[in-house]
Image 1 (tube, one colour):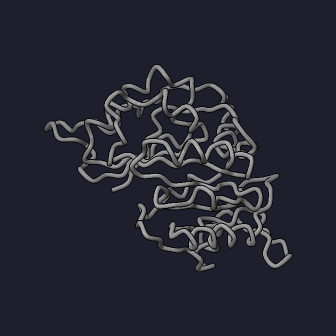
Image 2 (cartoon, rainbow, N blue to C red; image 1 turned 45 degrees about the vertical axis):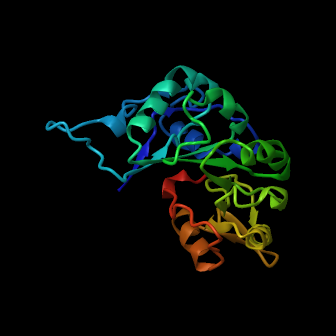
Length: 253
């Protein structure tokens, strides 16, 4: 069973990858200020119970965590201890989140974190080489049991090779969706795939984005086809470590 757990909502744009953020796009349709970070009514979702006292969400549930914000955003510091407590209580479930603020991880961890919790998977977003240089040295050395890199939106040819090893379970690549978006070049995607194959790290091409370049030609890809077209490319690679196989379709940019 899989479930989205957006325990707080809202974020502030942080780097180049945030320019056309899908959260801002969706909030804009309803006149919601995306910069206001607020707790949601689903905050206690993983530990909610039925009338007979059993957890509403069974053992083994995968919770896609904080995909309409950033789990490490400063605005949520007062709520994060309780979030960790719920993840600890539901150690029989898996929690997966992605962050651009990996530099804050060490100051945000619970005291009993140790070298990481088995049920928590953390992904670091890397959209260009500048962010790779800033984030990857911190990320690869962070105490995390399950690490993956999310190159979404992929904005240029990115060299991750200095940091790819068995410390990283998977690299995910994808383009940008929506209007006024930046292109994703298939050559960039293939180059990431090559780097992963050389280091034995799993790779997944998740979505083409709305403007996709291949062999020098540009293609306008409708949102409903972007995941299918990426899968059709047939370039996914299973490395030495088998990562969790899946990402929510609404997690793209």
